[in-house]
Image 1: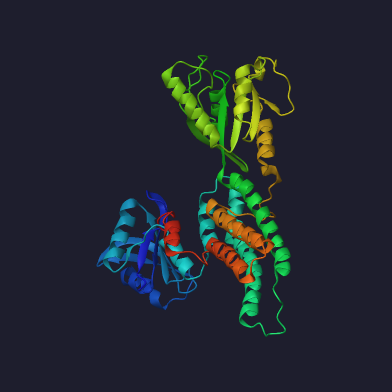
Image 2: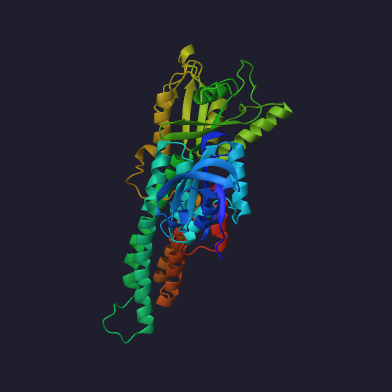
Length: 447
């Protein structure tokens, strides 16, 4: 039985206006019991009505009620949105009154979960809602908007339709071998079909690695010897004095974090302890953490002193970062440039806020974000979607290998079916209940 639920859809705290969302089979009838104005049970869908919320003879607030009649509401249920004044006391009283007349408090994401269960949106659209809400840059916002328009859904459907066509033809061959008009599905027939699907999947996975850096931000570690200006660079990018800056080497003992967004680029920055030989126990722990942070980073900014020639420790740090996308920054250019002018060297002065544009350009080039077009390239927006696409690609790869090994078509079909189901998990067409529940609990209350 579908219950009647309610929740505040606007953030907690005092504001000019607050919205309380009510949903369920009896939502309109129940709200009508405490609404003094017109009869909400007789109005048309998608209309707004002025009145008062009352508790007996006590007037709680003057409100506007938006009425949405199933199935043409956000979640496919009857829904009322109460627009009231945004005081904490007022909204609290209205919620208490709603609970008293038959509603219960909605769980985080429960309205969107109902929309999914009522086929108003799929999982990729549900995730896109949160992507739009939490977008940190212009690419993330456009990616969420595109997914809301079902760009991801259409992409997955196209793959599933190709595989479903193959699966149907295999089934006809197996169940009706005497049917003369059917195409005989042989390994020679399957291989080119699977090759095209596999090629498209790999391209999407490649695009998705780049798009995820653009959408969710680049985890960036700043490393270098002590006293080369790593903390000054962090402070410059964050535009705040987050890290202590002194002329004393080894001032930074632990990792300091912060996020920085400019246009379509977001960096999740980590300033680390200077990497060098040290006998100080606390400093050594900081240096070990620096090394671990570098191992998990998407991008490494190696900072050196541009006013001095590179030393062996600088080369050792560069060597340790060779397996990561790396940018060499020559800081302190305001003190003169002695360092060799390498083609990939970015000259900066964190103290005087110089070189930011050159650094941003280098980051886009190294991470390949500059090649990514959010409106044209086909990609997946998060790690959950990428995980299932990788599963599908692996299953297609195994199907190809089975063909090369001369296995029977009905065994090849098993791998194709696994790919088909993995793709379905992306949109929610083949997702277990626990996955659905876990996904929607990450939503904010009232959504």
